[in-house]
Length: 225
Image (cartoon, rainbow, N blue to C red; front, side, top):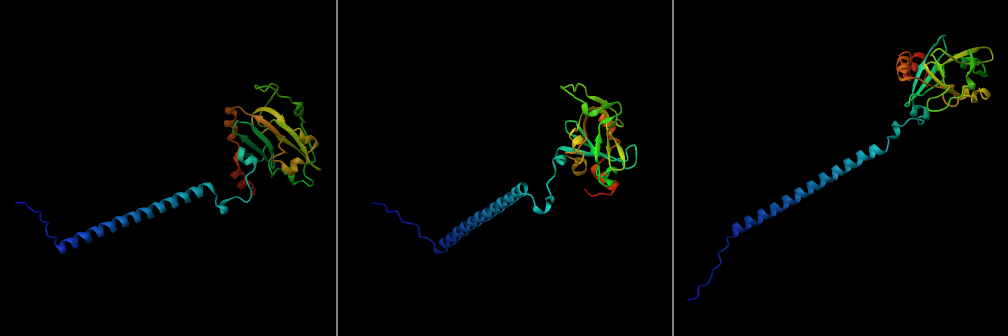
């Protein structure tokens, strides 16, 4: 006798519950996927904004003019009223230890009518302009103390002795100033520098104690540069 398989009778209510459950699960999966997408989009936008802020400076925070080569490559120090009132000088120190020496904006010479008209490197016992240094050992470099006379600058009515400011080896003087002393009036902190000196590390550490920073100089002299 052939046995026939019979299908189980389906309960309509149970089938409806199962179908509703499947739909709910499907909706929850879609909802989770949508939340994950939104979260990922938000994170991507945040990363993009952060990168943009790093690469593109805020225009409002940019300086009116770009920093000069001196500001980028040197640390500025000053010495004020050196040996006499109003004898203010700058010392720009490079990372390699070299120090550029010159007249600070508040030096008395700049207050005289007509400014500086002449510079003479023949002071003390030798003419600094004939100094010829050569080789890695800086042969022929003149050893100087901080108060060693470097040159004499003159205006129409007065002369001023400019000093080395730091103890070290005088490597060169700016001979260009002999024929173009007006550079001291127009760009004393650039083309109008006076000399370059290389102090020993120990000497620099000691000299630095008598110097002031750029911010301290501005505050002391009440100037805005």
